[in-house]
Length: 111
Length: 113
Image (cartoon, rainbow over all chains, first blue to last red; front, side, top):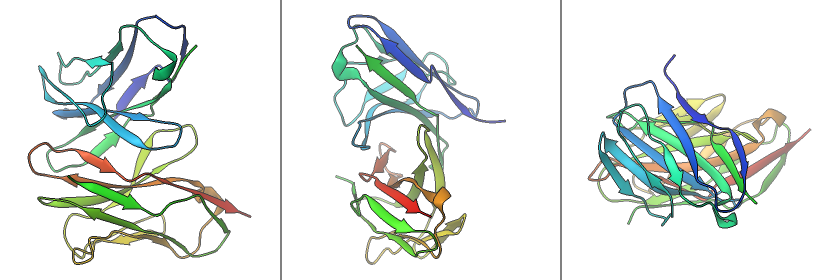
């Protein structure tokens, strides 16, 4: 079944640690996205990719980085986690006619 | 730039009440509107969408009509259930240049039995 997978679902980590949030999709979509959802619910685009070796920063500045070495994989990395990075991170992908599919999200807590 | 404005919440209703959540937008290019739903502790699920003017999207008893003249895509349901309690997001995809999904701020809906 075509889908989009995010791991881990929940992560509690100490300040200064390096973390990578995983996102994989099985639909062959070229476009992938990372959204950050703050406790007030608003969703902010922080990174997107139009295909392999293509990455762009989104509308909200983020200290995270992304890579797109394979079509199905779009990991997000924080080199040094801080409490201000505590949030929910949602990954999504879209097809050529604008149909979007979202993962279940990773809820990150930095202590 | 493209933006979505949605009715502020939280919204609390009794079971079987009529629901409307307003959504209006400003956009360049050729926008396509969506409604997404987020249940507690989960990601976003597509609820319904429209692809051209006057299209009506419907799913699970929810409906929304894409009104180009008023740039609106209001969500309605005739009789809500407790299980409809969730956060609802209106969103817009503009298929021009950088294709991105722009979200409204979300409306938290609580249905009491």
